[in-house]
Amino acid sequence: MTLPRVFLAPNNPANPPTWPVRILNFLVALLFIALVFSFSFSQLRYQWNWAAIYQYRQKFLEGWLTTILVSLASLGLSTAIGLFFAAARRSAFLPLRYFSQIYVELVRGTPLLVQILIFFYVVAPAFQISDRYRVGVGIFILSFFSGAYISEIVRAGIESVGQSQLESARAIGLTRAQTYRYVIFPQALRQTLPPLAGQFLSLIKDSSLLSIIGIGEFTLNAREVNSVTYSAFESYFPLAVGYLILTLPISLWTRYLEKKHKYET
Image 1 (cartoon, helix red, strand yellow):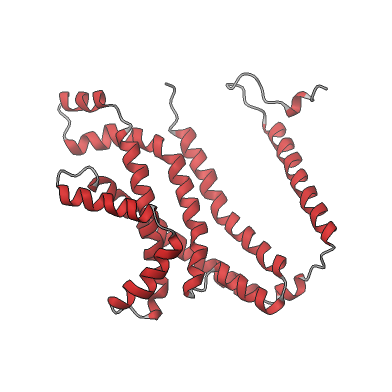
Image 2 (cartoon, rainbow, N blue to C red):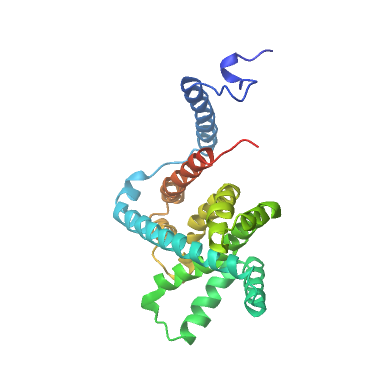
């Protein structure tokens, strides 16, 4: 059996499918997913109760906006932390280098849930941080966790630049700062974009764990609505859509940057 050519990718990567062909295949894949879910729920004979959920639309919106606030603040702070510790891992000052290594291994080797509980119930009270700053504490915890992964991603991107290029930069008289700006960072950016995008997406979804310390973000509000309405699927479908709205633009923007900075080897 031979499939129609419209469903087959061209042999030459230089000639990608046209937009009508892409849209058609996207709709076919979307239709297949919709049919699977429709069939599954029809077998359950589930009785939808969207009217009860609609009454709590304001609560969903407030939780979603809180998630956006937490995610944006954590993205910025975790990037700064990651850049700092990536540089510290290459520092000539050995105590700083080993401290950075301990931080990265400790954070990456322990669950985020454990870190949230320790920071909120042990570290924060020790520094006299009250519960009214729980959102700020949650942002710091997420940033502290994600910063370790970003640090390793950035470090790997920097070390992927060949030693010969660094020697050439020194040979033509570039300073250390100029070498990083004109030689290392442009090439490291191309290497780090895909894993950085993945880490940013994980950070947004990991913000749902902050519900265990009572931060009124999207997931906690969805759980509270479910506990009142007893409509689990209706409560969590908006949750999935809300997170998709946050993560999809980052994914698309990263693909655009990858194409923009792509070069032939």
